[in-house]
Every structure is written in C-alpha cells, then in structure tokens.
Length: 226
Image 1 (cartoon, rainbow, N blue to C red):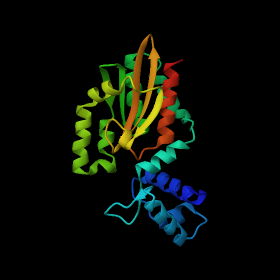
Image 2: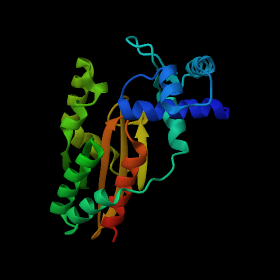
Image 3: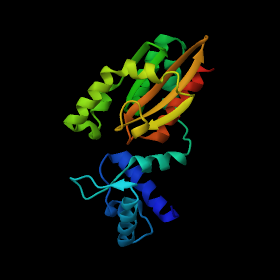
Image 4: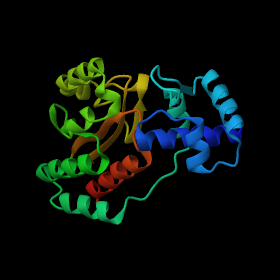
C-alpha cells in the first residue's frame, strides 16, 4: 500500500476508534487537515473500499475499517506509555499481588479501558467485570449482537478454558481469529506466579483503543512479575 493510502486508512481507523461513527471524506479533510483535496481523498477511499480495507454501512455515507484494516494497523502499532495517574491507580490495586488484588486491578482496568476484563487465576477459576461496558458500545446496540454478546458471557468460562493453554505471553486476537466471536477483539496476557499460570485480558469490539489498552495490559503484567 502506498503512503498516501496508508495515511488515509490510519486516519479513518483512529477517527472511528475515537467516535464509533462511520468516517466520511469531509471529516478527514476538515478535522485532520490532510494536505490532500477532498476529491483525492474520495478516490483513495474508493480504492481502499475496493481492496476490502473499509466498508460502507447501509445507514451511512461514511466508511468503517474492516478486520483486514485493523490487522494492518496492528502490525505497525507503536507502543504507548500509560498515563502516570492510571499507572498509579493500577499499582495501588496490585499492591497485595494476590487474588483479591487482581480482582481490584481488573475493576480498575475496566474503568480505564472502558471495556470488559476477564481474569483466570488459573484454569477453571475465572473472574470478570465491566460487562456493562460491552453493552454500551455502539457496535453492540443491534439486538442480534446483544444476543451474541450475552451468549459469549454465558460461555466465558468454557471459552477461556479452551484457549488457556494456547495463549503465549501477550497477544491480540480480533475478528475471525477471536475466540469470543468475529465482532470482538481481545488483548490477552499470560503470567506465572508462585508456580501457577494465570491469564487476563481486555475484551471489546474490534474498534478499541489498542495503543492504550495494550499499554494497560503490559503494565499490569509487569507489576505481577515484580
């Protein structure tokens, strides 16, 4: 992909992550002050759509990124430092470095990320929180998707048990590769403490703030391994 298309695609992704709304060419030109004419942006967006990087929802003139676009975006994702205030909150929650502390950290992670958090202290011992965050996402306002997400929550223990041994350290699985369903994205992280293996992660829609959420996951993992 040439640089101009990549800039436009990354800008669409960042804007969609921020607003949850489909992105039109006018927004890109006006809001991001791209040094490209609106006509050129429209032509490039048409080419991106033809290559399956963006798609037009039925109810909007704007476009949203596809799974293919997010995978390309994640391949070049730059690591972000967690804000000092958020780091301090998580550090305080994990002071005890035990199961009760992990549950408190999960609650704080749900607030910071705005997504759902799961934490398997070891296989067959699961805690999760922030489920209401999932239902508040615009993607999941569709009645069919609400049913799908509810079914996922009902099966969360089973899903985590199935993938527990497969996850290696920290990884992101989205869309068709996601064990929770193709409308979701998950950042997983594995750790070992006192001879036991644990797994925790952030579960949300494909449209999530990957830079920030990955920073949250990596910071929490580093605190467990102190």
